[in-house]
Image (cartoon, rainbow, N blue to C red; front, side):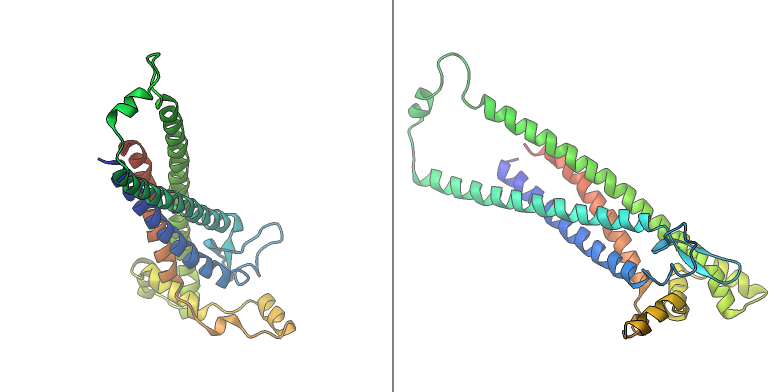
Length: 260
């Protein structure tokens, strides 16, 4: 395949990774900022429970978030993916434009073939050997960066997916306390309710913490919980786009070797 075709493919992959990573980061950070202070009120001082992922329910009816490190890792990974996608999009976009302009000028100014042969060195070496070595070195270096990003996004996607499921399974206990169920209703909530329904209970029934209420009154701010978000939908979008970004980086890594 021609070099221009390979550049176009890589530019398309860069654009796809940029859109997927940016959208996933926006959705995830919207949820994280919404619940940032809500899930940390009952947490012990030795921990930092400002993350919605890997939340924990207590026997007394309390619910706290998971370690903030998990949310930081996911957020920074998505932002790093978006940053690398921006760089590669700009690089391959400029390369495609420059190649198109160079091809247009080459068709306008025809040069004899003999002049090319005359300018070659007479010692048996070719003038393009050094650039070829540099191009191969840059290609390998870029492929390593893309492989590292693909691995990092794979881990971040696993953390995001497992954190979503873990919080869902833990918040089931809060739903049972909200509804004060007994008998078969317990099995119904435990085994049949989807995570989307469990997170809907969190959106509408999770009470604002006393700490957050005090801070809002002290600072004369309105309660941000007056607007209810769809936590499950935003997290699912983040998960799907995160895995899509991972797949794009894997394909991008192989395309770096396939398209010469």
